[in-house]
Length: 439
Image (tube, rainbow, N blue to C red; front, side, top):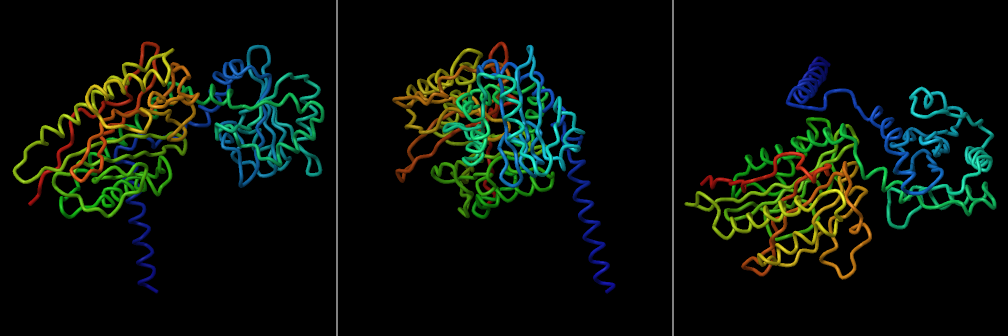
């Protein structure tokens, strides 16, 4: 019994020490989660213009327990139990919000002071029926709902919910339109406070990758060892993965594997190593950054000229893409600018787009920085970039390996669109990281 008590006490002490160490170990996210206040500001400042641009009078989000709408946390519906209907509508240049909430949850929701009114719905009543009655009385011409074939963030309304709501509206069901345009306009732009959060998170993401490379022992360490080091960093600081944990980070010291998991491949002299890694902070904002390294062979003090040239080509492609990112340009324009340079330098074909929006998820809502490699660009590639949009984007160069496989440099950075163009969130990788031969 004494041993058990001692062991339990020791575990508690070590757990407390580890938590304190992480909290004091240059963690810029120790403060209280700013999302609740930022969410209110986004609704007040950004939603009116998004609804106007999407040309809708009102927007309905239906939230529920266990299988919630992906937009729930953005409207305050993340804690929904029974069915709750969140209604937003344009009202004299601003947006008014009303929530038809199950009575058992209405008080707590009202306490958050997100919405103009929370209307309790009795246990024998229907939130959908109450919302439909209100919509009929207001005489809205267009009401957006979260149904979309192209944007999963705008596709949270289930088939049965849609049918039930249409039944409540009756003949007025014809006024329902997809919210994909509204959600695109709203989520694609980030507030300055959000950009600063992402900037701090991006710096941690890059710094940890450099630390991971410092642990590598050629001939012994594996790609999976690097991944484990970064997983431990996420756990130590109490963050979450930037995307699915099975493939975050993707560490690749061999031929290209695309979106993949880290394997037990042993890292050897002469390898070019890629780390693709992202973290989620405050359970809301995500990063996506890649860092590259070269493992020196015996007698080498730098990478071979060919590898250095591949690196310079990749880096220059990133700079060209950044220069093309400005308000009014399209994702296609950005991709085309880089691909012309890649062709000039003799790069092999790269299937991936130059970049993508990043923010609330790794592949967020907004313009795709791609399309120039396709006969028919996707519609999102033709969307214009706007101030406040944030992107992760790659500088590409691909070459053939002696065995016929391909290897790609894809130095990935994060940037924000400003009034004057675009700027990196953090200092980009300028030099290829060199890993010494420890023999």
